[in-house]
Amino acid sequence: MNQPRGRGGFASDRGGFNSSTSAVNQERREVSIFERFLGNGDGSAQSNGNPRGSNRGGRGGYRGGRGDRLNPSTSAVNQERQESSIFERYLGNRNGTSNPFTSGSNQENNGRDSNRDGRGGYRGGRGGGFNSFATGSNQERREGSIFQRFLGNGDGSAQSNGNPRGSSRGGRGGYRGGRGGGFNSFATGSNQERREPTQNAFAANRGSTFNRFNSGNDQERHGYDSNNRGRGGYRGGRGGGFIAFAIGANQEIVGHISNRDGFAQLNGNPRGSYRGGRGAYRGQRRINGHQNQADGNQNVDDNIADNNVYVPHNRISEELFAEDQKAEALYANVVDDDEDVVVENFDQSLFRLMKWEDAEFEPQLLTNVKERAKYTRPRKIQSVTIPLVIDRFDVVSQAETGSGKTAAYLLSIIDDIMKGKLCKDEDTFVSEPASPFAIIIVPTRELAQQIYEQALKFADKTGVNIAKAYGKYDLGPNNNEIRFGCDW
Ligand SMILES: Nc1ncnc2c1ncn2[C@@H]1O[C@H](COP(=O)(O)OP(=O)(O)OP(=O)(O)O)[C@@H](O)[C@H]1O
Image (cartoon, rainbow, N blue to C red; front, side, top):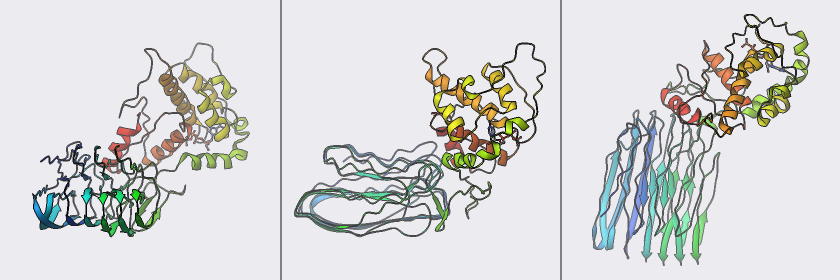
């Protein structure tokens, strides 16, 4: 029998546990509990009940712990099996995956499976997944799955594929945010009964997907599932969703659907692939039940969780533009008050940028500056600096605080990247992970955060990605931000 292992990512160990079931007259009870406290862990778990498809284990990220594998398999007739699987993780990089498997008909298997130290990923906690699939007739199935996560930056997802012919892929962690595990199943057939409550517990970064699949006739299913792990995307944990999908006749589905922050995907295609939900960007982050949203007055220490892991929380560009719009009246005629700029060591004719259009910025950048940030015209330091930077001169600009120096170099750089990406010749800028086009070095974290926000704002919708790095910022998420944020 095929017992695939999960696939680890960078430097991570891996563990996997996959199983499939194909039989008749089975009884199956499964409990899966994932608990995580105070640690950075990552992992995912997958299961594929595809009797003909491929099995792929969960994929970890980097630095995660390693999971034991437990692969019980039985093949016989007249068997009964009861399984519980417990994953516990405290204070370390642990996580686990477990998927029970039975094969045969009329089997009995009374086992208790406990996995600790599952597979980890990139620092953040990743929820495991509990996935199962049953096909056949006259089945009874009870499953419980509990995912819990506290206090960490987690990441993970889990997916299930009940596709009798398709492939199954495990959850994919995102970055930074807590990602919950998933419980996925799918049901097709007739004469099914299904009751599934779902419970989301308190605390941080949670969410989950919950999907089930049953295939066969005359099935009865009473599941109680509790998913406590959120799945996060970039910057923050977010809740997943609860998705139940069923196809067939005479089915009863009792349950509820709740979505919190984020989205989940479901593909119930009986012949296609099934992928669990995936977190999006910039979800809210919750720490110990308290929502921690950026509010504009935040300093960089605001996001130190109880475990002393600092991950900055960033404002979204709309908030930043809104600030500029509020200041519009204040800055409307600021140019007139700017000190004149004296240019030294430059013996060519100087072009002063009197209006934004003359900079020939890419349209979106122009919109961002003029329409969205409400910068009606270039300030004096900008009018001199921008043309020189665009023409690739080395420039040292010096002006008083608050005179608009930041925009002077940011706009020039962003426009250059945009043009580089757009052009289709040997100068084309090709994005690669962790390969910044430009690096801005500043002396303090606060300044880095401020300039990052400005850059984020100006680059909004331009296709240019911005990332930041500084001390104190938890290395794992920071690496991930760089890896996926500049300039990919
Ligand atoms: N062209 C413009 N039109 C209107 N407002 C502008 C313009 N350029 C910059 N500003 C505003 O001027 C203010 C000061 O800009 P900024 O902080 O970038 O200046 P700075 O010279 O970089 O400051 P510091 O020396 O403190 O880094 C900001 O509120 C910014 O939004």
